Length: 398
Image (tube, rainbow, N blue to C red; front, side, top):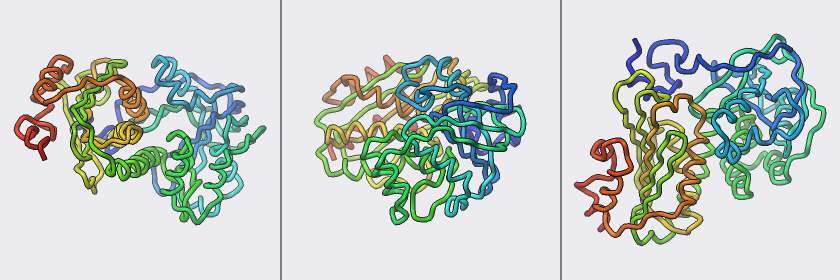
């Protein structure tokens, strides 16, 4: 019997239960593909695995359809789609896998160059994947969006190859630019983080290039961009009053409390029994991670959602040219039981900050309001939060 609390701490990344697989993820079902040849338009999509690192598998991917497939990689489209529509699209992406050492990006062979060319393209790329066997399985992950079945890749053919955007081409061809600089430059130009993380994952930027597992590249991109924004935010004046934002979406509740204080940040999650990482529990598991003005040196136990949510709130503050202490909580309710990637948190936080906030002069009415909308007892949240009754008033006066 698996101890329920292990799933919250593991999230299919550490195998704390002792199994060599995650029992939550094995139930993914994909449409059966009978052919070993897939002709379609890659959105583009490339997935880089992490198993057996540093010898990993790179998967150029495409649905078996031709045409405009950009929405397969567009989180703005995903957030406005039903979960069924989203899963149907993502799980139809067929993957052809080829093994590489992560250092192969320094001197890529013809196939890896083609995969890189597909990844940096500005529009969908018509490709043909010749597979060594019929594709099977699928990918569900707490960090990256779902993907469909896979098989070893025998041959990759590119029919049409749209050129990359000029800024992408410049970063890709600049071997003197650090990867961090490339990420910030692409973001400043307006590229979405999904695209940036894919370019990073296939070794498409940096001085010492290497392949980066997709799971890691997503979190690295969220962290690097929000680090940059935090540096700017610290130069701004603080907000004047306490602001509270709320968003209810798809069996999730998102809450943000912005305090008129210098920058610090908290992300908390409450997983209800019957939700993704609390399938077998009988109580609500609340996990919280935070950082002070000078950040943190260790990786948050709560996982990649920490940096995805941090990016959402730093974008909001940067746009306003304001500084604040940001407390963000998420309650995940019964029935939300599939991991679909940190994009879900990032996009919901972005959407939440489009709403008009409730404004408060003091913290007590904030607590009164939170008691009304949260299903978890507020005292349970506060017991793990840096937002608590004993210190908040003195904290706000500093």
